[in-house]
Image (cartoon, rainbow, N blue to C red; front, top):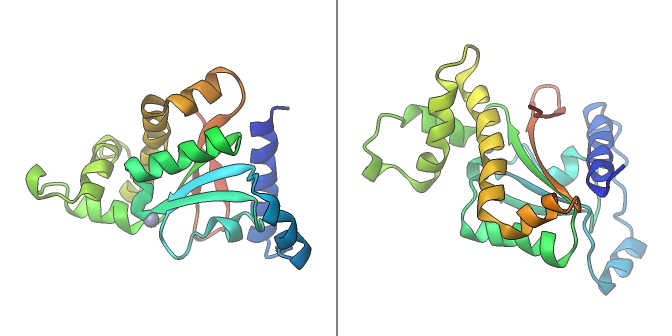
Amino acid sequence: MTLADEALRTLLEGNERFAETESTHPRLTLDRRRQLLGGQRPFAVVLGCSDSRVPPELLFDQGLGDLFVVRTAGHVLGRAALESIEYAVSHLGTPLVLVLAHSDCGAVAATVAARNTAPGEMSCLVSEILPAVEEASALTGDLVNNASKIHARRTVDLLRSESFALKEMERSGRGAAVPAFYDLETGRVEILTG
Ligand SMILES: [Zn+2]
């Protein structure tokens, strides 16, 4: 099992505890705080939405020093977010980058509502999410949730094309980037494969 597989398993086990309301809130002790004075070695990066209902440490039942979290509305990847992720991959040796979309995402819903706006008048967030909304328009089912899932996959692809550090990490087998989707109703995170 690779470090990325192991990291993913730890996240999903924590999410299972959370979904079952059996969170253990690990590694929040004074000892842990003291241990981390020597530096951090987070086992996963989570790029997620700023939505107050999707805090990664709680959804995955993890503690201090476990997750390197980057959050923007609709988990849109700008330069600052990209460089933050690269810092974790290159300098902290974090082997997993999880891009976490979620159901009922306001940023994606706003993009659906604004899709016929003139390009020059679109906000940066909307124009970044728009290709996923357009792709999802051809599918049956919930447009916002389908678009969120596509947007997570596209964000992983974008990371691979924009970040040499991430591409190198995957190429060498040191780590992986994975898209995922959190369901507000069930509390469960699904890995988006294929
Ligand atoms: Zn959202």
